[in-house]
Length: 295
Image (tube, rainbow, N blue to C red; front, top):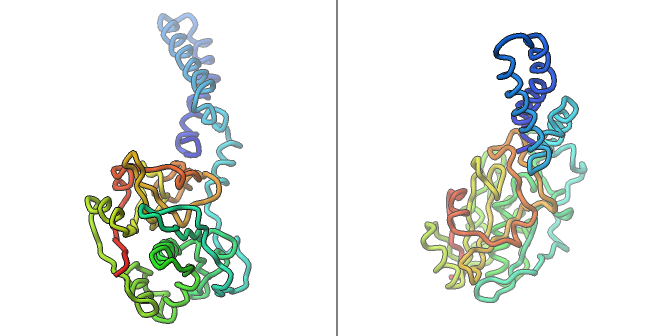
């Protein structure tokens, strides 16, 4: 919340009232009958700021200065991907191996890839002279790569899958990269996979029967999993009935959703994959579910 510019301006306004405006008015109107009311308002306002300073939202008080607001704006500002990446094009898929630190419900190794790793984020394609990097568009590709690698027990990394997709879809600048199109490219090379759109009531049985579920999420004001939109993989169910997810776009440190995002001000925790989630929590952000399994 304290990376929210509007909230910081509100706190700044309250501080100006409490520390400047009300004392001046009380001094000027000290002989008026309503002076005591103004003093009570002043005390309440100062107590509110003191409580905020002591407890959980103290950073709102600290940051509610002109310099603090500017720091917050700078921190929230989205930096263009062109400024973050080198100008070399590397679409080689060699040497990109999955992190197999997780197990599916049926005991398979989950081949986890993250699109923000150095070996992946330098991959881009060009549209109208602009470089579009995989860590800005690649959660669909990466989540599908996680899924099929796990089902085949074979390292099929996202760059390899992206290269297949480019071979099959020449005009990638004008077309959205969808799970269905990725499925078509994969079937041509590997076969024996089925994909079906399902609803949330089918997720539990799907995972217990050896399938993996790709969920397409879109952010809202209460989002905990994404600032805008993302594809994730639901791969296991804990003893408590909660679900384990693989997020291919998860950052190495927690961050606040930037000003231009749908979930502006919310915190996306870097520990999300070590937590388990209720179906209701996932479903509150989900738009579509896709069951992927061996044919």
